[in-house]
Image (tube, rainbow, N blue to C red; front, top):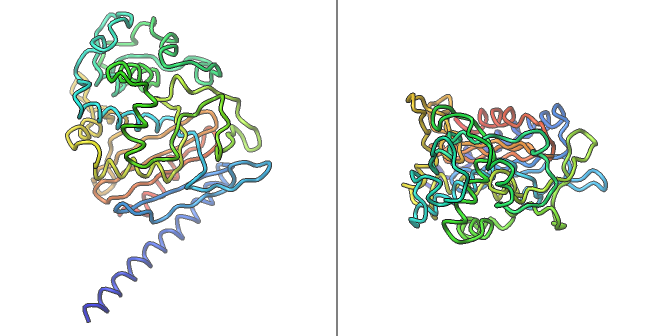
Length: 346
């Protein structure tokens, strides 16, 4: 009788998941049509197991190539900041970086500003570093990280650190320069050795502008228009990685059940920072921090790049990770994210 009860319970769970996937698939197809997205990849895990992973549309229109969530490489845009943050957590564990040290401790030659600011403020978008101007967003000039600093290093801070929250990507370029200087390891090698290899994220890599990378999707800014080329090497920490939706699930699982970084360092990433006024910013380091309708924690990051719109959602209480990647600029991925949250997170 106990065996039969167990079998029946298992079947009910399976039927429930199947029903959710059926509903989610219908909503995903509707979203794809409405947003006119060429291709989209969705992967969802629960308790460290993939429960749904599916590709929609095409990675390339001519010739047509279908999306494979295990192989198709998308620009993940600002989800790259989450990878950078987890790498930073490993440096905290190894006592290589102190979040509350001045950035000048690590980069003494960086031009002095009116105010000093810390690594923590930099990672939390509180330092006052500016964002892209004009065509800087889509530069197609290959530069190293240190060369990328030249774009903004002589500009003044926008405000006194920790008095405002101002989301920007140049702060993460500076953060990556600090990380490689402190560790004495090139940033890409550091990320690969510290995080990608341990998590077996074998399909996550730099979006190198001068290399033909297999399985990389084409990138669109309209229904049939291929986006212009862009060189992301200098801003890899902010938005320059390629990955698959299944690979990024592994980052989410590490946040829920850390195996390679300590819980103490993890808490620095997923605890909302505060302004000097005492108000929460809703952002830790590399992760936005919110709550579901059930008042359970929700960590996430969105991304928007040239030919890319993405979102990674993490629900530690429910042990669920949702990743959505698309190959088109300007897609409202937060909408399909909310839809999938309403279906899978109870």
